[in-house]
Structures are given as structure tokens and as C-alpha cells.
Image 1: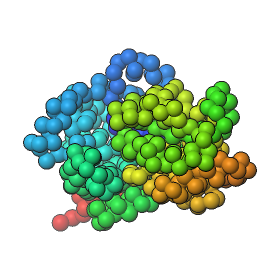
Image 2: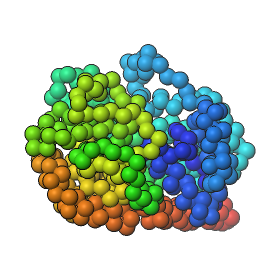
Image 3: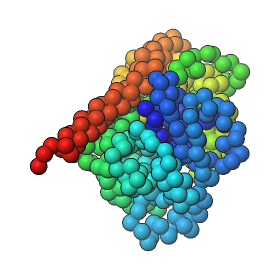
Image 4: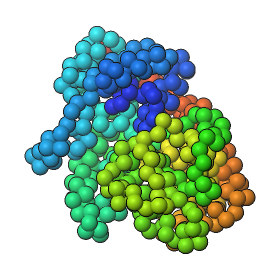
Length: 422
């Protein structure tokens, strides 16, 4: 099949969660013998630097510079439109024109829309290719993500502007994502919880689960190039992402002090790009280090004594958690942080949802290297068995097969109707 992927970011190099997922799926689809085409946003320099890697799995690449959207523009959209912020984030007349030309001049057997931001181009796709199967590959159930953020922060008056924003976005995304699910041929969720959320949102729509995955072997090689100390606690991710910011602050302000009361040399490393200004309050602490962007998270994963996932809001499946488990690290996570994974407390990782329980789990692992080792080995085996791309990609290919089978039956039915005598 000729398959067109629409992505908000260039999938090479695959750094952030969305690009890691898209890169793995596209490479897997190409390896299965399908012809992969890409239309995305990227500036010319970034595109040029990635062309060699992209040519390994893309038959063609169309790229448009990312649209610029000021804070003033975002505020105006919030106040004077009924559209969700994500509907405007990658709105681009240039992208629309290039997509129209591409769809008018090239046939595709299937179009896969990666992330809700790119679903704004569904009207163009449906107008020009009304019979082409379209998949919405959700990175999160975005409407439900905003609900969890609202629920987590609504009692904190310090977060009032953010609470109001999340409430508005939750309501608008509920409407938008419902229409998206009803418009596409098939919706893909990354977890059973997200799939259930979509089924409640739009009853009757076809939904399948294709979990997040990683190249597990990439994280299995032990990297000892860093020395973070004997009791390093590591958290990774994009540090401009609101759930990650909240997680880092909650852990530093509520959990870390409980840990250090029993393990005084414990240090917390916040590893990820574009740290939000809300994290500046932690910079003066001698027990917290904010690294900013790093070229490779592997050294931090392998040097950590315990990897922590103190998320209190979110949906989907955490790629950061899969990476840490694949690296053989002992992990302590909240239930929300481990959402979407079929893991057991005390077997593949430790689960804790209060500050005291989280601290107790971390201290127990810091004081017992044998427990860390056993937990890390079980976690790594879980990822290899359930979340390596060799396991995940066949699930996507099965969805393709299901969609094509239905599409062929419908075409045959239409042909018979056209030839049957009146």
C-alpha cells in the first residue's frame, strides 16, 4: 500500500515522545513492505540534516516551515473563537495548499494522521479523497488529558489561570475530538484506558489499541559515562510539558524532603528540554539539578539509582517509563504515570500515589540494591515482551488489514449496485 503520514514534527531524529512513536511506526510499516510517504512541518535546515535518515523509510517527504503563533494570537483565539488551542497550533495555509496539491496529484491507499493537532486537515482529506481510509493515531485522549489536569489543579488557587484554561480546553477538545473520531475510518489509542475514553466519547466508532513502543535493545547497553552519585533520582521528559512540570515540582517540594530525611545524599535530576520558568524555584537547591536538553538520556537512565515518574495528570502511555524499564532501572511511579501498562506493584516497578508512600518506596529501593536489581530485570523483560517495536508494529498492520478488508467489501458492494438492473 501507499500510505501517507501527516505529522506535526519531523520524525527524525526521534527525541520527544511523539516523534519516537511516529518514527517507530513508520519504520515498521516500511519494513513490512508498504510504501511510506511523509508530509510534515520542518524548517529547511532541519529537513536537510535529516534527509539521509528519512530516505531509509520514506519514499517521499513534503515539509512546510512550522507556523508562528504568538501569545497574543493564542489569547485572541481563546477569547474570540470556540476552537481548542490544539486546533490552531499547526493551522497553516501553506500546509493546506501543499496537501491539496499532493492529494490531487498522487493516489494513496491509506492516510494516517499522527496526533490531534494534524486532524485539522481532515476536511481537506475528506473533500479530496472521500473514499480513502483515514486513521487518527492519538498520542493521548487529549480531551481526557485536560480533564485530569483540571481535576488535579482545581483546588490550588495559585494555579487558577491554568485551571480556567484547562476547563475551557477540556470542553472544546471534547467537541473537537468527538468529531475527529466520527470523521475518520478508524481511531487508534495507545492504551485500553484511552480506548475506553474514546468509546464513551463517540459510541460506535471503531477503536483499536496500538501501544507505545521502543527499540528495547537501544536502551539495554549499560552506559557508565556519567557519575551522578550513589543515590541519584532521575526524571526525564520535555520540561515545558505541563504534566511534567507539575510532576517535577510535586516530587521536589513534597517527596524529596521525606527521602532525604532518611537518605541525606539523595539528589533529584530533572532531565529534559526547555525547562519551564515554574521550575526556576528549584534551581537554588543543592539537592536538585535541572539539566535542560541533553543529546542522549541513556547515560542518565543507566546512572540513576532509582527512576521516578511522579505524574499526577495525563493520559496515554509514558515512553519515558518504557525507556527507563528497558534500561533495567528500578522505577517508582504513580498510578497515572504507569497508566496504560499492564504492570504490577512490586513485580515490574513500584506504584505509589501519596508523597509518603512514594518516598517510602524510593527509600526502600535505595537501601536495598538487590531489590533494585530484581525489579529492573523484571521491568526490562516486560518491555521486551510487550512494548518492543517488533511486537507493536504487527498490531498496527492488523488494523490496516481490517480497514482494507472493510474497504474492499464496500467497493464491491458499490460496484454491484452500479451494475444491477433497476
